[in-house]
Image (tube, rainbow, N blue to C red):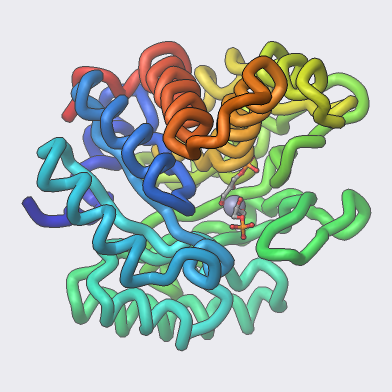
Length: 309
Ligand code: G3H
Ligand code: 13P
Ligand code: ZN
């Protein structure tokens, strides 16, 4: 088995009106849970790694486990760098064998973002690797950087065509109201589908990416809180909004917080209900089981990517 790029995945997802789940991986249990759910549901998948994930687990460990998951499951799998902060960060992952990278120039000016993204695209394409760029700024916490709601800004549709044509980037993350983390809205959830539609009209057939797309399952949050946690006010993107996005030009939907919540709920449940347990396989095994259920639910009920591998 070899890693695949997202090119084919996105083409099929666009034409088929579904989206590919991009799940952040940080340890063995998450990798196993995600890939087993995808294998059982015959779904293509993107496993994505942030710089903090590499700092925590080590790139070699994560890649070794991804290889093992590919051998075991046999599904189409892309390995992607999430929020690459510099050319060097992207180059390191491209050289290491990732099949896809994101260069996140969203905090730079339009011109600087173009120059940086173009440089990564040239290097990546030469090695058969695809690149995701970003225009617009999401609110929330990513890689220890906290972007306040005031500093966030929606993607300007008028900039998209120029950005894509001048950089040659393969897919584009846009800001339409999603945000990173578990506390996305204080009031009602609202996404600017009008911006997405405008971009789709300008660039028909072009794959769009949604970051910050966890739904923050109320039952799991309640379980965490009932088992000694404190996550009051946690709120995510309603599933019907994600289904609407998946049926449109959105081909990649990023989820990390939902897996963190599943893992925390699984561990807290055992710690609270079985205080005598001290075997990590017991509470990590329960966490893995819950993550797998969450991923399966998303493939079948949100992304619609089941049966598409
Ligand atoms: O977009 C951010 C992802 O959830 C990764 O988070 O940098 O804490 O691993 P992290
Ligand atoms: P969530 O925090 O909504 O899971 O978003 C994750 C993400 O966008 C990773 O790039
Ligand atoms: Zn993100």
